[in-house]
Length: 123
Image 1 (spheres, rainbow, N blue to C red):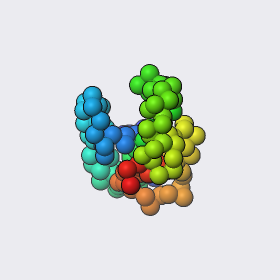
Image 2: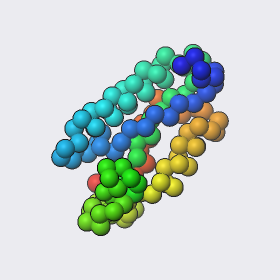
Image 3: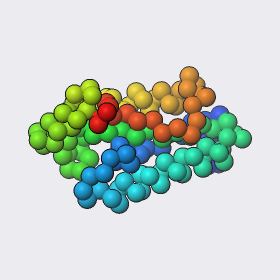
Image 4: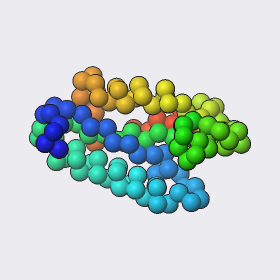
């Protein structure tokens, strides 16, 4: 924490799996839930230094995560598309700009928030 400049920004990374339960993901989801709680504490503790702390929670993104299962398994990708309002799994390019926006001064008043970036699943 001493290395972060006053007025800085922190973006922690969580997961959509803190909102949806899938088999064999309990340890991962529990750890990401802890990241979300930690974000609130960090925001409170670093607020006096004007450091904003938020969590970004991506959904199913087509990457190497879990062996590339969303990217490389057409059945999984199709399932994600069917249950997501925007009709497709996410792409890395969907996530990077959101993180960049949270690091921007333009979002300096956003603090202690969990921001979901996953195309609207199960709504």
